[in-house]
Image 1 (spheres, rainbow, N blue to C red):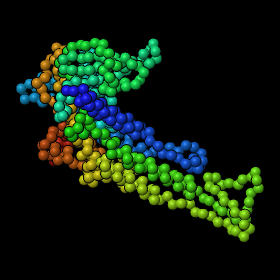
Image 2: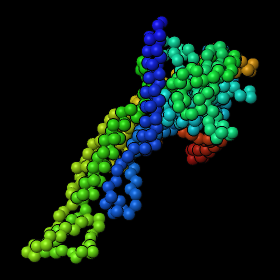
Image 3: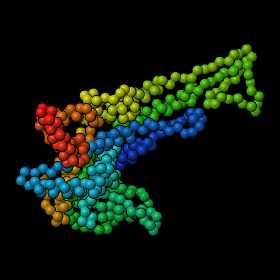
Image 4: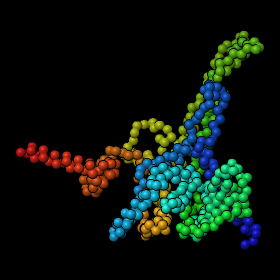
Length: 455
């Protein structure tokens, strides 16, 4: 390969990472509400304070998905062939313990889905610390995977960079860790000026190789979770389609406020009057126009109509709901009463369909994580569960229609589809044994009363 060709390929590689990192910064800013709505001076004067607008729809789009998926419990199932039930139970208990100790059954799973939806990618790193299997969530802007081919399934390596605070210089010491299947390389940045800090942007000479260690795990312990199912190297953020719509909404709000500033406040024209110099009459935030004509008369110019701006904002919100599959109730108070049954499912169907796709991605990537956990557990000499396959279940979803759920449970119990115990578990009853005993006592009491009545 000649030098020009190699330099061009290197530029393409770096340019791809540059665009990805730039997009992450934009998505972060919009999610956190760092987009501008300009407030004209007269509106500020009327309010006598800064106007705070609640129009950050980007955060609602991301949070609605994360809360929808995580609204129920997360289940882990280890599948077996019927002959090794005891070992499968141990493997399942191991996974639950690892997930629970790392917060993956609760807030950390919410964090994974939030980052995944917001930025399009999220990474998980597995490592062993003091005999414990640890899972760390990594922001995508510090992870640089390199894949073997354009199907983006097998990693050649994955670089992770971070910084440590330098107490001596009050600065940051940038470091990088590059995982290969057989070794792990450790680097430090020689230039601490802050320029070109990203591992993939910098020249190799700027990073010093400080250590090389054997990768005792025998695999790259990094899971790349993409937000979308497609043929791209990296995922696509849910906010990609939102940025232009958020800008349009901010523009309409700004135009409406500017119109209010110029026209919405009352303006009075006084004919035949002229205030002496040094004096001023006003009606802030409105305005008074003086015309020195004695034959004039007092007139009032009515305020402008801002209804078209309100209608434009409603149209933009409708468009946001369409392209993001988020129900309008997530953005504003519902106009009608509560909905249930088929209407409820129809109302939430776009969000349900969107979240199901994300659940498929999460289930597959978490199953890969489970394989890594089993391999790490085997390397620790604690047991071999590597032959088991696992399945992840997300029980979150539609708001519960209590009446419909009760009818379904009664049907399942009546037709012996499910046991009473299983239905009680689904209903969320904590002390099932106590409830079963109470049901048995009440059942016997009813039978005795019937016998007495017949006598």
